[in-house]
Length: 226
Image (tube, rainbow, N blue to C red):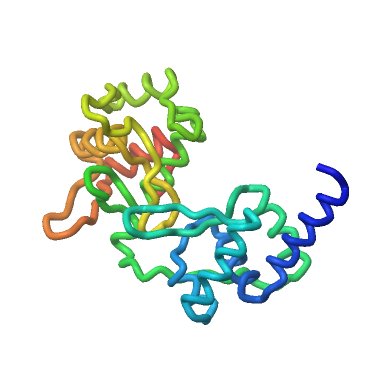
């Protein structure tokens, strides 16, 4: 990229950030979560149509990305480089970072089912630990030999699904707005947790109760403390 192209690109990015509403949206997205246009418009206190226009501008400059989940569209920061640049600018600006408050009941935020796999704070943390421990790798959620061996020792069925279902994939979490583990492997993980009585389903709710044995297992096998 030539110097004049860099100058133009930098000016375009600066102009996109310079608007106060867009800047606030970017600050809100610094928590790593994904939000709908409606949620962002409410948090910034602007009309939904205005928010959509602002989001289109940020998408055009590749500062944010759009994630489709069912009939909803969520927006998040494009990548870590954008987050790092914004972090530096926020440090220069000073002041506390704004947050979006979740309306999800506390019990459901911690752990619940999402169809046939786990969701909530625990599931998102577990998803991240699977990658940190290199049991899963890459954007296509490849199960490593180390991961297969470790999960099979925990009683998780790691066989490829007979159907066309994804073996493993990210599923955007409703409350955490980060990925938890979906696909056949996510379902197998929940099934193994249930067999070992590490989690227990509530009869009248999607809530999952983490048992004392489950808390010990999460700490021992995944380094997750509750």
